[in-house]
Structure formats: structure tokens, C-alpha cells
Length: 508
Image (cartoon, rainbow, N blue to C red):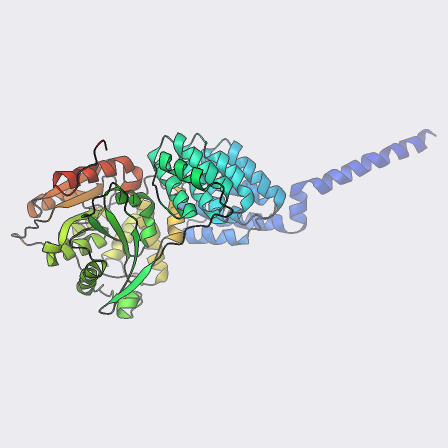
């Protein structure tokens, strides 16, 4: 009887052991081979080659529970591209239980970089069920989480998300977040009130009972000027704007205007604002930008096309804004048509060829090996094939150098959404002789922490531009209009007011 009893008692115990073994995640993953896949992935991550590390992410199955802990670790990485790759994997999670776990992490994980990374995953591939967690994340204590949650909500058109965004804007203390909340509301509502919480609340009060809310579909106009196609989007002018002040905003070469549009839209408070996307090198010349020789971007043709655009838009005189290499295009336009140019604004550009050469020389002495390599290729000191792989690597290095924080997840969104790759191309720089004088009022912004910067050659600006203001943005690298958003506009308004181009409205 005793023996019989012990055998009976061992059966349920044996069943419990078997069940526990079946439930254990590690043996299960090893049994079907996924454990070996994860180990291959970890080996790839130890590679010094960034592209090899990135290729490892293709091995992963996002709907395996074992994948999530690996990605959480990488969301706290020190490089925006690795963080973005981890977010891409999480964005493809379709298993309801795992997606629910991610939403809980968004609200409760102790590391703000992990919370922001999950918000980025939802921005990359949003589903309607993410909206509630993202709305709650608008109250997160870390501004990075709040701003990425605001961007993510732009992909979920719903009354609930609009309601939460309007409410969050009233409470938001950080201008860098408020501008992105306003931009998301613009994309959902089809109109822009910037970060004016009262205006958005009044709009929502009028529209909350509409049966359907559609996302923004702005009209892009494409025109041809002597074989140079220009694509434009014109912002509606705010009531307080001066009707005589018109801006042409040139997209940075190799990027669309979306790379800085959310932050520059506020200029519509005091101007009529037209964004101009420049044609690619291939559209203008038929050349790819890859090969042994570096082709030249036909700036003279483009400047004539911009003058044709000004006439077509019916603008008498314009303020021309350029960023990086397109700062030279803005300067060239003003030199060619001084009577049609109100002012020139250059963001993180170079005053002339000499300042660019000096900046590249400093870049070649960078403590960062990747930056020294990029400088060597750009100056042709290194014999590197000018192919797509080299171009992509240099583009990543320059973007990383421009971020105030190299972990910045918005860098990843810029990389995958806002680029319009050109290939290698030379933009003929402005050349200033000893007697060159440029009388048009000129505003130069520089991120003071950017190693590839024209700021150290500011004396050349003082020598050749008698009517100038130089703004050294002390906390910024390549995106001063983001990092120091309020200072950026304070300087801009002061510049326009000082030269009599704009007067603030009464009480403004």
C-alpha cells in the first residue's frame, strides 16, 4: 500500500516538472533553434563594424517573447542608429500580449531611454490600440518621451488622440515638445495654430463633434523653370503676419524640408512662408553622384529658377533661408538679385570657400575616428570609392555629428523619413575677394558645439557683410532651431526688427 501510494503521489509531481520545463523560455527557444539565432545576433553586436551590427537585426523575430529583453537593452544604446534598429524590430510586434507589454513598458519602465524607444517604435508603425498609452506618455517626466509620443500620435487619426494632444499642449512646459505637439495637431487637423494652446482649444471646441477627422493633405505645387523643377508648399499666413514679408525656405541639400519644417513653421506668425524642395542632381544633370568624379550642382541655373519662382508667386522681394550648402545658394541668389532680396538667413553654413576648407581641416583633427575618416574622403586625401556605401556612411557620420545627443531618436526619424540622398556632389561655394561687400542684411546661425562649423571664421563675415548678425548657439550642434528653439526665434525676431523688416504686433 505504501509503495502504491508513493507512485500515485509521484505522478502529479512528475506532471508539474514536465509543465515547468515546457513553460521555461530558454529550453523552448533552444529547442526550435531561436536560442542559436539570438546568440548569432549577440555575436554580430560585438562587431566593430556598424553595418554588420545592423545586419544582425534582420535575424530576429519580433513576435518572440525572447526578443523583447534584447531590444530593451539596445534602446539604451549610445547611438541613434542602433536605438532606431531596435525600435524597428519592436514596431513589427503584432502579438497582442507582447504589444500590450510594450505599452506597459512605455508608461512604467524605469529608464527614460527605453520609454522613448518604445514611443519611437509606435511612431514607426502605429496601430490604433497604441493611442491610449501614447496619450498617457504625453505626461511623462522626461521631455524626450513626451516629444516622441507626440510624433507617434501623428500616425493615429482619432478623436481621442486629438483630445489628448490639445489638453497636453496647455500643460507642456518645454517649447521643444510644444512645437511637436502643434505640428502633430497640424497633421491631424489640416490647419496650423503652432503651439498656441488657446487657438487649438477653440478649434477643438468647434470641431469635436464632427463625425470624421481626416489627416492633413497639403497641396504641393511642382513648377518647371527653364528645365529646373521646383516643388513648393506655402504656409497660410497668421493674422499677425506682415503681408510684405515673404520667405523662401530652401531644403538642405540631400534632405526634404520636413527635416526642419516643424520648427520653422512658426515663422508664419510674421511672414508668408514658402518651402522649396530643390531638384536632385540626377534631375538636373542625369548624373547619379557615384563614380570616380564628383559632379557639380548647377547653382547658377537654380538661382535663375528661384527668381522665376519669385515672379510666379507674385512676391516683390523675399527673405531667402538656406541650411548648410544651400546657404551658399541663398547667398548667390542675393548677390545675383540684390534688389529682390530683403535678407539672407544661413543656418550652420559657411560664409565662403575658405571657411569651408578651414572647417574640413578642423574636422580632420577630430578625436572621433569616424569623423577623421569622413574628412579624409571629403577632401580626397583617402582613396575611397565614391559609391553608395561610402555616401551612406558619410551621411550617417555627419548626422551623428550634428545631434546634440548622439542617442537622439529623432535622428533616426530624420534618417528614414526626411532624406533625399543626392550622392556625392560639389556645390560651388561663394568666393569673396578682398573688396567684396554684401550689403543685404544677413543672419548667420551657428551651432557652437559642431566640429564641422564655420563659426571660427566669423571674422570673414564681419569683413564682407556690413549688415550682419551672428548667432552662436552655445548648446547646439547642427540643429540649433531644435536644441535652442526659443533662442532661435528671439534672435530671428530681433534681426528682422533691428533692420526694420518687421514690427511686433501690439501687445506681442
